[in-house]
Length: 57
Image 1 (cartoon, rainbow, N blue to C red):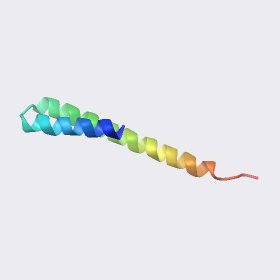
Image 2: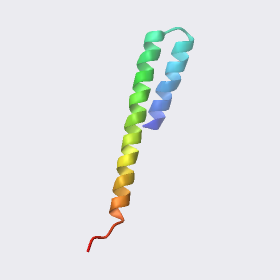
Image 3: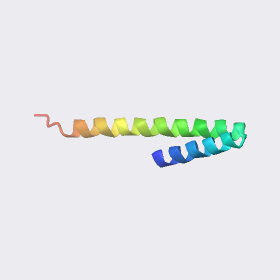
C-alpha cells in the first residue's frame, strides 16, 4: 500500500512540474488517502500482535 502511495506521490510531483494541476491534486489526494490507510492498518496489526501475546488465566 505504501508503494502505491509513493507512486501516486511521484505522479503528483511530475504532473505538477509540467503544469497539470488537476491531475497533480487528484493524485496527491489519492496518495494521502493510501498513506493514512496504510498507517491505520499498521496500527491495527500492531495492536493485534501485542494483544495476541497476552495469556489470560
